[in-house]
Length: 89
Image 1 (cartoon, rainbow, N blue to C red):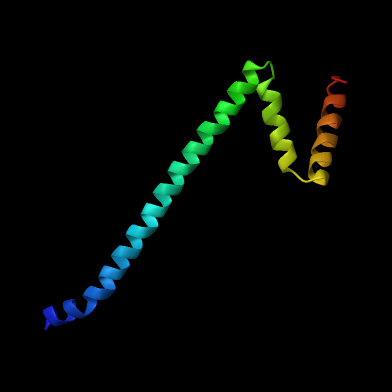
Image 2 (cartoon, one colour):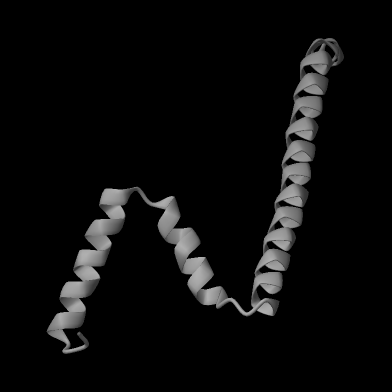
């Protein structure tokens, strides 16, 4: 009887294994693409540095451009307030 139950579950088990394998392979493929893109971004920054640009400033600009205008303005205001409080402005 246990053998009959195992035979009935086999297609479902096989499907679950195939589905799991597919998910893992997709994640692995995306991780590889992510690594390739990361390498490409690093190459662009290296090229920019070779052309005399300040990479730290470029990274800051890229980060700021991801923010919406109001969020960026709020952070700039806070930074300016702190800098004034510390006598840096």
